[in-house]
Amino acid sequence: MTGGPLEGVRVLEVAMYGFVPSAGGVLADWGADVVKIEHAVHGDPQRGLRQTGRMRVEGDPNPNFEHANRGKRSVGLDISAPEGREVLYELARRSDVFLTSFLPGHRRRFGIDVDDVRAVNPKIIYARGSALGPRGPEAERGGYDMTAFWARAGTAASITPPDIEGLINPPGPAYGDTISGTNLAGGIAAALVRLGRTGEPSVVDVSLLGSGVWSMGHGITLSAHLGESMEASETGAHGSPANPLVGLYRTSDGRYLSLVMLQPAKFWADVCRHVDRPDLVDDPRFATGELIAANTGQAVEILREVIATRTLAEWAERFATLSGPWAPVQDSLQVVDDGQVRANEYMVRAGEMRLAASPVQFDVRSAAAGPAPGFAAQTEEVLLEAGLTWERIIELKTSGAVT
Image (cartoon, rainbow, N blue to C red; front, side, top):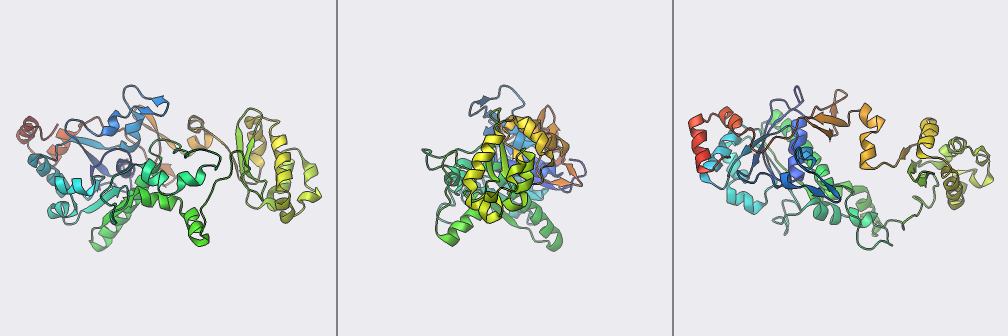
């Protein structure tokens, strides 16, 4: 992204899979020069992820890799070899941020822990993403968004109806990874501000577990205060036991509308007119907010019956002037063609692909995303910029230290 707020910031990423690389992808969207270090032979294992549920990707580009690695440059480097590690240190000397997903034991083994990197660049921001946080008895353990973010942090149990066996899975690949990666990118941006103001570099930590707790923060706070767990309603239950204007309604073509009007008395008359039931406006059963709450079951049945008479498209046209909040329930393919998504550039072109834009806009524009790099595609370019000669690069290639 030319002219982005992080233009001129250099990020050295030593990370794999979805979580931490998605933080690097956001930083690249914001204008940073992100150099991704990949295994000299195998690259990031995410490149080989082709099957996601029932969806399979053949050939390149691969959306499973592009999403988190937009706009970066790739260097193939064997950091287990002394020569490769020296190259990494040379790149760290000229970087502002060191970004890693490696577990503590691997960081120590490869010589890329905080003290190792700060020894060659005392002012570098050291940012690390973990599964379960940097402290405690499980700090050395790894994990994925399914385990640490989704299952352990409370979301899965909170949304799974009591009549469903097991747990509802995350709605899509890298769901918790992407949320957590955006948190990490924001933390790095704050650390850059601190560095600029005070000259003090930070160690930035974000974990999947911590991000999951934050995402469920309202519900977990309620549980801590009341001493009871948050439980989902049974399958098919209306969204609120005391508000007919909070819940899902099925249309004649099998689609759904989501109504979320937290002040039912304020919106009741408007909804009745929009569904061609003005007689309900003065119905004594629904004359006040208290009566609407008390007679929610009857109101829900009436609205279910009337909304089932028209298609989603017909209701969308009618509800264009509805004063209360509502939305069509859309699947992932329908989101791609949503007019409001297009108008706000929430999908952007990156090479051959359309990618979801990272969520922060500057000056009312989405950041322009670049395509993800080919494996080790910028190795020579980056090493030459770091001051290595062609002769030295050839030596490193011959030894296998670089791709």
